[in-house]
Image 1 (cartoon, each protein chain N blue to C red):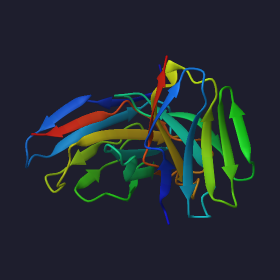
Image 2 (image 1 turned 30 degrees about the vertical axis):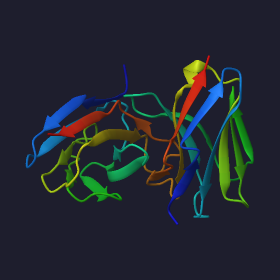
Image 3 (image 1 turned 90 degrees about the vertical axis):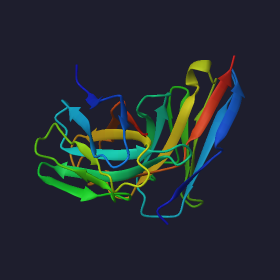
Image 4 (image 1 turned 135 degrees about the vertical axis):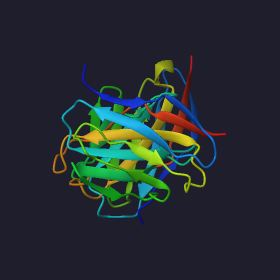
Length: 113
Length: 114
């Protein structure tokens, strides 16, 4: 019940296309859902995050869509660029006071020029 | 230049040896975390600390130990009891235990057991 399931494992998108990564969870106590971007050999960096009281959050080309009833959330990357090629992790947290995050398995995105 | 530093970047260990990975932050963050990353498995929490001189086990603490004697430092020791220690280790910190801030990660240490 503590798992976060992420799909697809890998994704290839043409430059200018839309990249979509999906995550699903079971624990309804999760109350914070961040997405992290990681380049090879580097630590993950926070990309965008959402709380379950909103259904969508947009920052530039990145949008999180959140479906509380379905217990799913997704990352949309509009106008995907080769520089977006990285591994993306969704995560969820049940307790902000400890900051413990449960991570999805990761999606490796390749944007072809 | 504020941030989280981890050293060394690459570490090689012989079987049966203990090794210590360094994590330092100058962000004045109270909480610090250690994760292990394996291909296709995401990040798994090893240990975390919300304040100095206190720490809790994460999901995969067996074979690891930590200390938190200073606010800015949270070293991780990989002991010989850890059966499969080859992995990428990530340290993270967070402003405060009650903060709504998220975790910020260091650049990682890649440990290889020979």
